Amino acid sequence: MFSHVMIGVSDIEKSKQFYDAVFATLGLGPGVDNNGRYFYISPGGVFAITVPIDGEPATHGNGSTIGFRVESSEQGDAWHAAGVANGGKAIEDAPGLRENGMYLAYLRDPDGNKICALQPPG
Image (cartoon, rainbow, N blue to C red; front, side, top):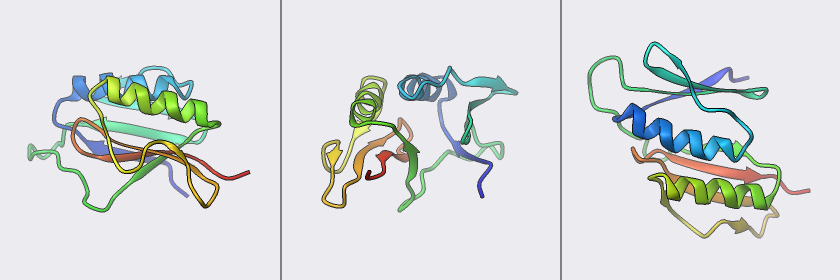
């Protein structure tokens, strides 16, 4: 259904450092530059970051979460640790298995966007 997700950021290089680190834990290479925007391309879709082209400040969506699939709790823990080590902020409950059988780990990126690593049950 989705081809890509793009979010606005205020400091493109700081955000690239953050996303390069968290996506490296998922086996993805660094962001690919395309006219000052960075794209992270996987078999499941594309995630991109950009400074807003209208010149207005980047803002995060209140109530929005972007989720990224992980293959194991170890990979999710590495994803979370890489995010915290590169300017992200740990939020909500600690990374781990929830009552519904899902592994979840939540972060805010350097601009306050809420992102999540998720491993479905089973």
